[in-house]
Amino acid sequence: MVERTFGWLGRYRGLSKDYEADPTSEEAWIYVAMTHLMLRRLDPN
Image (cartoon, rainbow, N blue to C red; front, side):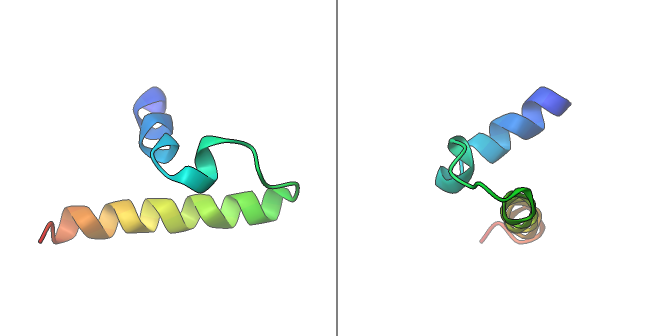
């Protein structure tokens, strides 16, 4: 399950490489990516 989640996060350009120097900024981008993924699953249209 963990590898699958990392695969989903790897699709987002900002998270595919380690661009962020601040861990809190990186965490915020992860929340944004996962929220986007969950919203797309709720309404795929």
